[in-house]
Length: 316
Image (tube, one colour):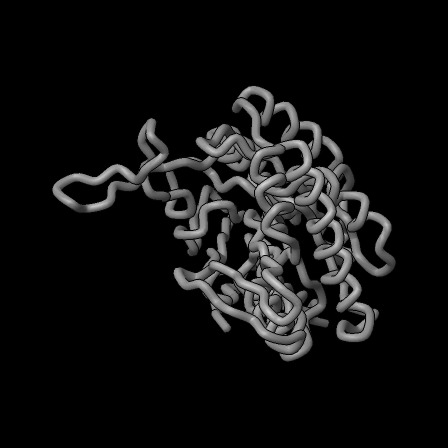
């Protein structure tokens, strides 16, 4: 009797785009998958203030324009546009916006609050939209603050995969690591390659075997087709040569080394939005779906596991 194909929907780097999250849920239902994985960088990076000028006038400067909003309906429409882009709308007075701009501690506190609210809302959407028989796996990435972990852990029906083995079915088991090697951006979950290696080895040590193991590691392996990104100078601006943007490998050498050493069945990666694709390292098939979250375009992979890895990159 032939073994049943195990079907996975894999996405990453949604960065707060509610539109992409809704599409993720829709795609999971459409293709009748067995498992849905949203792996890393769930939260947004920008707060978009909607400034109250007077009773029937709010202003919002975003997307290169200043918008005047005259009633609750117009404000609600703008808020949804902001959420779909991956930003967090925030209604306030001009004075409050100026205070936040000058007080990093208060601004960080507000970011934490908005991130928690957003993630809880996203996860609440799954209750009525995703079949209870589908394994729904959600984990943070390097850009996500630690305040989101508890929200994910405590949500009924969601599997938080960090720090344990997740049995995808009776054949495939997965370990996960959200940390990445050092970036120019000083994100919450990045560390040296030496420290990252220790974290990876700790997770890999939880596995019973490697033949059918899946490595859900947010950082892609170094010097592959999955880790090419614009080269950034010391001024944090893209480096060009004769007007042409330059690229470089920015993935993790530790991730590459453990894949070469243990040869898992599959590697699932993200982090580098521009480098969607496939890379084989020995027998291991490594995948990165890529991301265009700011445009509301969901890049996703449909993956079929049955003796070999088959995958279909899509966008929606």
